[in-house]
Amino acid sequence: MPFLSREFSCRHGVIRWIGEHGRWFQCAQHGTLRGTRGFLAGQRERVATLLILIRSYARRESRPASLWIQLRIPRVQQQDCAIVWRQALMRAVFVAVFLMVILAVANSQNEGYRQDPGWRAPTEAAARPNPLAKRPDAAAGGAKLFKRNCVECHGENGTGLANKHSANLRLDVVQKQSDGTLFWKITNGNTDRGMPSFSRLPELQRWQLVLYLRNLNSADIPSKAKAK
Image (cartoon, rainbow, N blue to C red; front, side, top):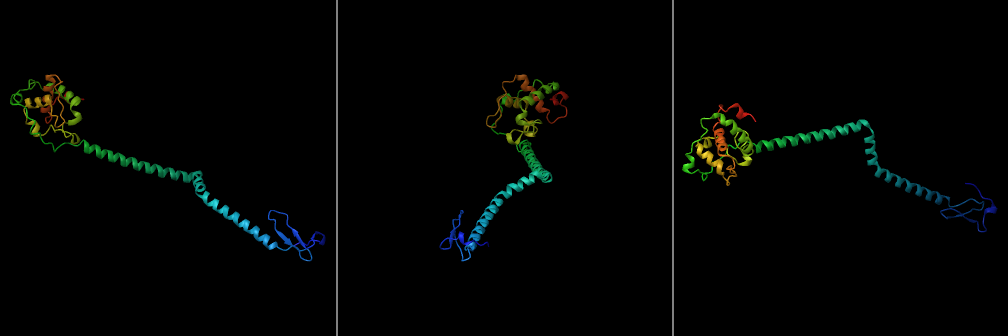
């Protein structure tokens, strides 16, 4: 530690340190400064406090910095993209399979159809013959009418849809009914079972529908009837 000459010493051997600390340092007989230990200890405390602040700031910034480093590294970025695409693909496959199962259940055949016992045609109406019975070619027009008016509830093949609670038109309980009964049911409908009335259709078109229903279980339907 340097010595101060006597001329820099005060009368009582004390000088004031001009600085931000404003501490007093006492001089020895030869002008040596005392109190330097306290000054250095204060500086060490300030440095230690500064280091603590720097470390805490580094901890707060470590995660975003590491994330930024990962995004800047092409290999890590490619791995992250591959993981994201793999997860998205798995979710898409799961949703597609789920929708397929739902559609399959909704569009399944209504094998459990039970005829409404109260939905009966009058005797006179049930005895009416089909004027197109000897014209099998008329079934082609019946097929077009069926696709236009009946597929939504009875399905493309007439087997009925479970979610619509519609009749399976291929079952014996339907096919054993007379032409007049089927014509009457098509004309009047059944609101209790959700069957609408098709009285708006011309009479011959309703008979064409009856003729087409008769041929659902037969391979004798004309090719035009099978065409869309």
